[in-house]
Amino acid sequence: MDMNIPSAILNSSASLCEQAPPRLKGSISESSTEFYFSDQLSAFMDHGRKAMWLRWKPSPRPNFNPRLLQDLDRYCHFLSRSEARFECGDEVTELEYSILASKVPGVFNLGGDLNLFSQLIQTQDHEALRAYGRACINVLYRNYVSYDLPVTTISLVQGECLSGGFEAAFSSDVLIAERGARFGFPEILFNLFPGMGAYSFLERKIGRKQTEELIASGKIYSADDMLNLGIVDVVTDNGKGEAEVSAYIDARKRTRNGLAGLAAARRCVHKLHYAELNDVLETWVDTALRLSRRDLKLMQRLVGRQNDLRHNPKLH
Image (cartoon, rainbow, N blue to C red):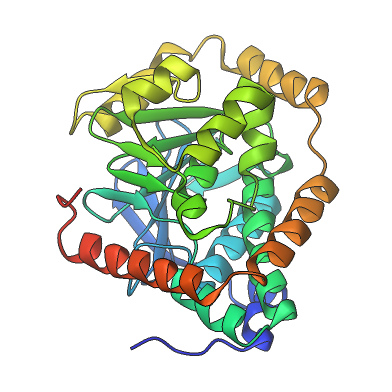
């Protein structure tokens, strides 16, 4: 059963991240350590590859609910405070990679909490809608700037990757997808647009024309489609995603420092300031609050779609 989420909860992530560090669950092998944030989020450090794997399992639907956003905010602060140094026994590992991935079979992430959106739009709760959006861009921007650390960020997409899930995926330096993954922005179908970074991230990568065509189409695209557009960097066979990420890291052992510097240089040239994301968010909030009853009914249909995918990820 869905809960009404008041503005106070949506705005509470900053204090929570200070009060509730992740629980160290100890070694899950001789070379990895697990950090537990909640039932929806955990991470493990692969000390051998100097990589932190973050995996989410949202509930009740595989989207960015407010509680998951709080946990993701805690993860961002956790990494930043670590200064990219993690202990394993007597050894200290210098973190080089941070990887986003999903624990939900067949779904990377379906994006925003549409049921919550509908409630807030119907009550015209401008502040709560803005607070939710800001929680999203806070997390995506931290990933985009690599947590202000000399690390390379990677997204591994296995399955459905829509709306805010798509925004999260290409906020990373590198996007690796299994061939069965599917991408898209269905927001235009209920008269809205993706407002948590899609335009800013995509326009810098593929230009204005292709960005607007992709967002305005409402279509679902394959991993190979995204590879051809230059959004996905590597496509691998289904079930081979983790191995591909490992191979990607192993192949760049000798050049990783230079490649991390290259990514930082790219961010300098194609500057994206937080203020830009916030300005777009304000436009998104204003647009959302103008949705009609018909638009909201279409949004609710997609909530049903999210429920269907939770129970049967093979549905397309």
